[in-house]
Image (tube, rainbow, N blue to C red; front, side, top):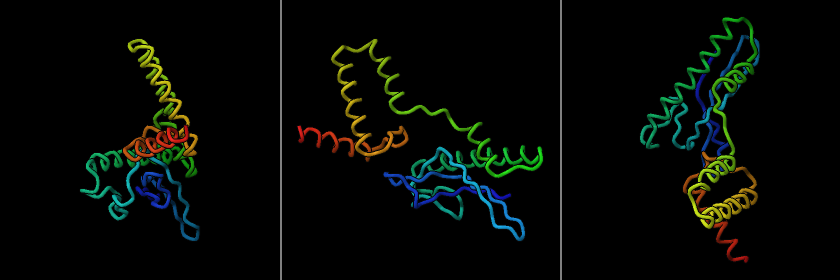
Length: 176
């Protein structure tokens, strides 16, 4: 069983970010190589990735060291699962992915669930008009999400996101 870190540069998101995967593969003589790719919650720009060293290239990201350490931890988690499954006997590759996702994937809440929690906390300390502004912002964000055809995720919110959202708001203003 071989494990390695990898990305699929052709599957980058709208911001040019790629998910880093832990790939587990098995090849026996006479058999086709079998693999399973386990997504980590780490995304990087494709040009920042070194396939040879299976890491973020030094200087291509301000936090390359932290990302690389985190990736090694994720790789170790998968190797630990493989060791545990091996001790139990035979297992299938998809079991590795299933165990990883069950044990290590963070519980994710959608963007608007978090936004609603934020709003309920703020309602206690803000004026009625301030809360109205946040509710209007939520309406615009929901429209933006619908227009772009994909859910808003916290991991996607960056400068590019804000620029696209601003363009969307400008278009709304012009059409009204």
